Length: 483
Image 1 (spheres, rainbow, N blue to C red):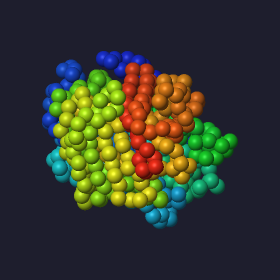
Image 2: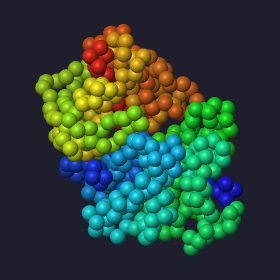
Image 3: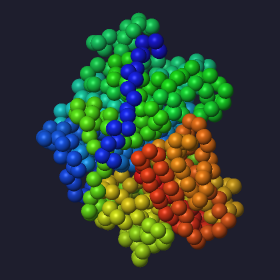
Image 4: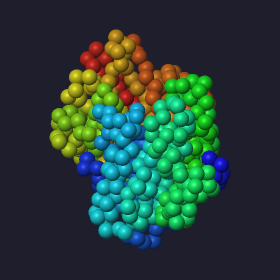
């Protein structure tokens, strides 16, 4: 720990100026010209592919807005990829098989294969790896333990990866991969010389694998998984022996994004700007350039008793409707109505960047509910519009209706953010302090009416309008934010 000296760089508001196969191309449809010609690379063919790696329990879909920003600055769409790891949630004990969960070794091998697929598909000699949270573990594991992998990677960017653990205690969940005192992270963090050779324990070597250039992005004090107290891991008042600099690595450029939460260290415009500069040496625009014609597609995935999966939910039905942005009501018949096949894909759907949408997912699993997902207009094309149906919790089944407000690419933070859900502020489940809740669930006494979710955090602002459906028919509504 004493070997780490993170470079504290406060990313100022100026950054915001100007406002499975496992291989998944990150967007479909026509490409668009960058809004800022000065930011557009002169030779896009020379740009390396970028492979994005999601975190614990997540999907490739979380990279949607990051991909849009890369595209808006001129990065070729066919050189942007995101992996969907089939079982995204970590085992309780990394050394013991657990149904529906994945080990560090499994994720390492899946990512190693994906790197080779991307390089083969593009013909590029090297690629960039960008990982969020647990995704950074897979990246580090590949580079440290798969022969020749470090020669295939030019840059590594880790957002919010708890590189020194969410806790670091020898007697608390000792073989969990998130334990900084456990075997997995102790091996990754063992000090190395510039040639990659291990040094005696306690030496002031680097913690990165030689070859690629390394960047870590972290919060100053607002990352729920880099806290001195164990509240966010279900162990209130326990001293975790971890501080806010857990994501920093000796041997990397370590940047602090003040006030950002755990997910925002990867998905916020400030994180994109830092990543772009690290790769290109230039400042980007963080604005997303809308496309007139938008082509959308994605997978329908499910949830098991062990947690979420990124495997296709074969047989699920998906209908998509254009909706009125002021009332949440449908504008005509379904734009698409499809039963999901073996590949899990529900599209493609051609629309525009001004039309708000309702996605209705009717699952085959009795434990899951018919889920109405409301989204504000999609600015650009994407094949990462992944849909995962919700389940009604037991206490919710007696309610007239249940509505969820979700922010997948960040947490709700008070008083940092303004969040209004069906007129309630703050909404249920969102409390002041460290940003740690990404959803708010409302139990309503009536159905068949409009519901509105509003979010603002600095320059990020979004309003989603939906409709309330009866819980008695096993329906649930989700208002999902892009930003």
